[in-house]
Each structure stands twice: as structure tokens, then as C-alpha cells.
Image (cartoon, rainbow over all chains, first blue to last red; front, side, top):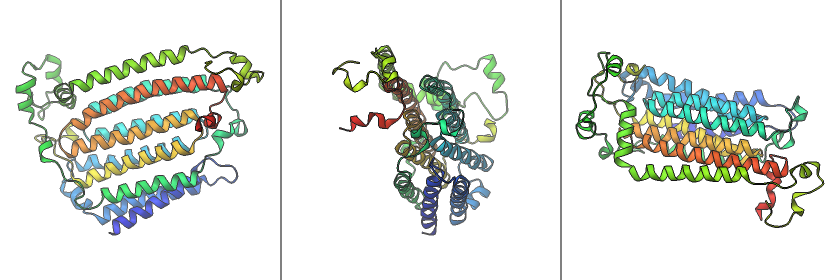
Length: 290
Length: 116
């Protein structure tokens, strides 16, 4: 009960911090907002650690992941959340995109802590490598001139829209979610969902899996044996054994979006320069013209 | 590194409920921040960045639950989330460039006429 109240208080404080951090005209209350935000997050973590038997589980190693790795949870979470706040509060979109790379990197770190190595590297490659580069290109394409100082930043980047109500609604959702997550025995592990043993998987699906020279080199540490599957192999078996249709559908989605992107990019905008000069307002053009 | 995360002889122990709650908390915070950012910011590019941030929260949730249930279906699903995210980014950014070419601004309010 105490934990629930504390988490609710932390959510309210977090909403307040976010409102103060949002871009706004007038006084700069950033430092105060940052202080309140860090207090809310740290208070929530410390309160949860004291209110539950987290410390006992840490000492006994009963968390399901090594206690050393759990320390990194706090580090990566803190970086991810701070960077996420900067993404939505920074006035310049370029910096928002750069901070978003930080979010991607630290959540990849969280996935590593969860020993989902393949997913962590896929996230870094696809988000950090592909999607963010696209964003940077679009930001460069769609900005007229680099603002030199604060006054050059356009109005729509300098003033947030209804920060108070948006934060209140968002953090109400957060408070509800957290109160459910930290309610005792709210989530039951599904015994039927357990992964089959590696040896069974190798026998049924990977009969030809032989250790090549390099793999043997890598796996020469005493803890790993040829009968233990790596994370990527487990995901691969699950992906191709259980979800073959979904892979095909994913391919169709990518193909359709590829065609769509090409069609959108080739669309002709008439009188683009005239619109820029203001001689031809877009609203006066005939219906259906693109 | 891997040996630290998976000690010898330990066949991927399932995550305890408390550890799961912690990861879900981070994921929920990321999702909420993305949601608030999507509503409050007026810049089209930042709005789409915020949707990607919501995806991040969902991905962490999926992987944490996969570890909690001690299987990899959640991780497999992340691949499809990434697929949708990539498709969305390609289409949305193409549209943003098109809209910028027509109105010469990234302000979402410039398209307020679409509210009907």
C-alpha cells in the first residue's frame, strides 16, 4: 500500500518536472524541473527497494539475473529516461534526434542486461543505424537555415502545446501502470510458456549444427558447451518454426512501404518556389492537384 | 560479458517478478514520455521521433516478459515491431518531406484544416 502511494506521488512529481522542463516562453525553470524529476525517479526507486524485498533478493541472487547485472539496470534506465526527457523538451529537432540515439543505445543496454543480445544489436543497427540516419536526412532537407541563436528557432519549436494537461494525462496512465506492476502477485509466470531445453531443440531442429573452427574457438570457455544455444539461435528457431506466415507478412509490409515511399518521394509539387515566395498560396490551387 | 550474465550451468533462469516490475517501470516511463511528447510538440519530425520512443518502451516490455516467462516468443515479436517501425519511418518521413515542400513549415498546425 505504501509502495503504491509512493509510486503515485512520484508520478505526480514527474509530471510536474516535465511541465517545468517543456519549452516555454518566459522564465527558464529548467534546473528546478530537472531537480524535481531526478528526485521523483530516485525516490521511486529507493522507495520500491525499501518497500519490497528487493534488497534480500539482490543479496540472495534470486532476481533471475545476476545482482551485478541488476546494477546496470539502474545506470541504463537513468540514461534512457534522461535522454528521453531531452528528446521531448529540446527546442532543436537535430538535438532531439541525437538524444534519441542515446535512448536507443541505453535501451539496447537494458536488453543486454536481460541477456537478449541479438535484440540489443538489432536495435542498435536498425534504430541507431538506419532509422536515425533517415531522420537526420529529413531534418536537414526540411530546415531552411540553421538558427544561429535562440530567437531564430521557429515559434512551433519554442512553445509546447498544452504541456500541463498532456503531462497530467500521461502520468496518470503511468501511475495506473506502476500500481498494477508493483501489486503483489499481479503477474503469474505461465508454466506452459517455458522454453524447451537446448538439447531438445538441437535434436529436433538443428541436427546438422556442427561447431566450426571459429565457433569452437569462441566457445572454448569452460562454461559454454556445444549443447548450449546462443540467444540468436534460440530466436531464429522460434522465428522460423513458430511464425513462418508472420515473416512473409512482414516482408509484404516492408515491400509495400518501399513502394509507398518511392511514390511519395516522386510526387510533383507544382509551383514549389511560388509557394515559397507567397505568390501562390496552396489553398487556391484546384482540387486534386498534388 | 556473456559469462557474467549467464553464469556457468545456469540454464537461463526466469526473471523474478520484482525484477520484471523494474524493467516494466522503465518501459512504461519511456512510453509515457513518448506519448506526452507526441501530444505537446508541434514539430512533425519530433512527433514521429516520439512514436519511435513509444516503440522503445514496448520493445523493453516484450523482452522483459519473454525473460519472465522463460521463452523467446517476446523477443521474436520484437523483430516484427522493428519491421513496423522501419516501414512507418520510411512512409512518415516521406510524407513529412512532401508536406514541408508544400507549406514550407514543419508546424503541425499548418495542417489544422485536416481536423475537419
